[in-house]
Image (cartoon, rainbow, N blue to C red):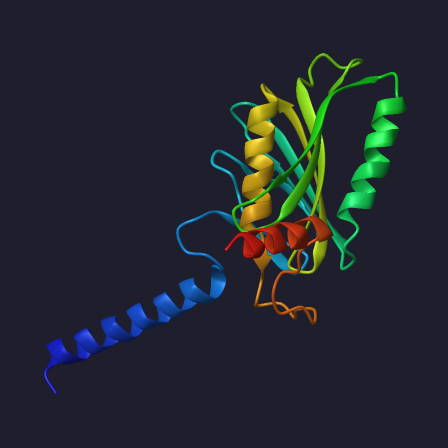
Length: 195
């Protein structure tokens, strides 16, 4: 065999091995992704991982100091009840001023419960929020801090809820597809009835 063909063959083998390594080490091509428990989440633009462990992750935007804390609370669908309890606590605390509380549904049917509030004792923390949602068989908790507007908080929270997916490189629970909360089921029934 000619030396050129051997060199070409070696380069092709190296390229194939590099391609294999890239696909195995990255759960999503083209986006910054972080893992949380058995799931992966796409990071909002401008955010990077500040800290993570098996069940939670903290993201930060170094330019604006906006912070996102996300935690996997387990397999139970208790997002609504946890949200209601947290809203009662925040409403009764003199240190916090509740701006509003909403429920919003992402384009893929995940219902997100959000309370926007301000910490009256800390002028550095502008707008903050606590939210809960249930997707892919797990309840998630998110706390967002230091945002300029409640709209920006809602946008980032919905983005996170929409982009969470199972990390198929890790053993998964029995759930094969996302289950919806009762509100999501009612919404689907309404849509089907209208068709």
